[in-house]
Length: 621
Image (cartoon, rainbow, N blue to C red; front, side):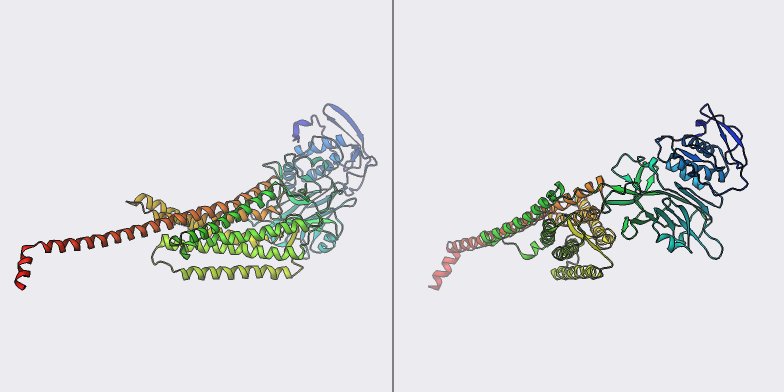
């Protein structure tokens, strides 16, 4: 994009294009003289640069028509040199009409337009067929509050206030923006520009697959108090640039980030399609330049992609690892009855068991949706997928609760130490975990029963899962909560291990192994928490970001099998150490008994050869 400055237009004469009483005017643009004849007028009608009969021309405020190239150069010159707010506003309107349907590269940056808009310190609104500019104090007479602006293709723009809000918003507009009443409490001036056909700006972000498909809305305010709260703006867009695109494709409300020169959707809600009015609606928590952006829809095919296959494989491996652990434990118990596990030694594996059950239901849900999805446009979950979805959600919450409970119990046993917790406390925590999961799932089912809330949807060939609007409440909050608890416990246990290594005079392997057991349990919960936290965004984050998050989800879930094996090896090593201690103690006791018996026999032999003993025996006889 070429950014302009005042040096681009030279030798402009002292006469002004904005004077409606002029008869002639002359200007030298790039050393080329152009003479224009004006018709005197006695009144100043509303300025519209799009009143010329030719599509190649634009009108000046005095009614004269010039070619768009001349109008563009003149508009840029006035914007760069004039300090008059009215001249700048008229120049902006002229500029937008001059660049419409042209191949010029001499265009203003979005940030430059934003600065020109913020410099308008007057009370006005100007409309044309191409754009609308408004700079008004929100607080008008008779409790009338200016809320924003709207634009209807072929008719121009209108101011939206508290009196005409419902009528304007319910009309078939091309674009509109309104600021909430609360955000306008300390605003001195609300300024907006709506560019109806921003064809000159469709390629300002070529680094991504995002495409501009709507009008551009630029909004800013002049405040009485600089340290005011954030602005809440509601946006309404119709796809005016590429109406042939499917309404079910991915559309996002974004602002143009002047730091990265990319469209960015931070601080904006997901665009919701209004079928009745054929438009997309969203909201943002800041003011800048906004537009509706189209993203290529991820291919929804009847075959699994690499991430789907990797996810199923990794989760299946984790399930197989846990089954092998159980089989090995049972085989060892049958073959070596004297070396059997005591029940409390296997309690840490409850953590792996809950994750295994979760994976089983998750795979069942994925395969059910994959095999029964009838169309890539299907968005309603069918009955079997809904049931499996809520079971999966229950075991997801239950997994977080159980992992945290088992980790905390082992923290009390091997770090806190005194008093030693009873296993009854662990079973109580597991019982509480079950009810917490049940209650959380009951809330989800309750909200689901209200069809107006629409909390779940079908992601074709993928999952039946929560919508992006509510997934934060049902998954982000519990995941972050359990993740925080386990990170804190992880840090405490890690610091205890480091201190023990530094201060211990001898190595107590059994004690260290159990601390490692706690570390593994907490690591398992942390990786699962992070994995499912990233999984929150997979369903509605597109492009490269969604692809990366998807692999985080796959890999972190796949680590569960590794944690299970490491945990089992630690438990086995601990059991073998205890068995060695028991065997050594038995041998020591046996040796002591043998030594005592041998000493007793030796004493009897000595007594048999003692002379005093023989003499006493003879006297008796």
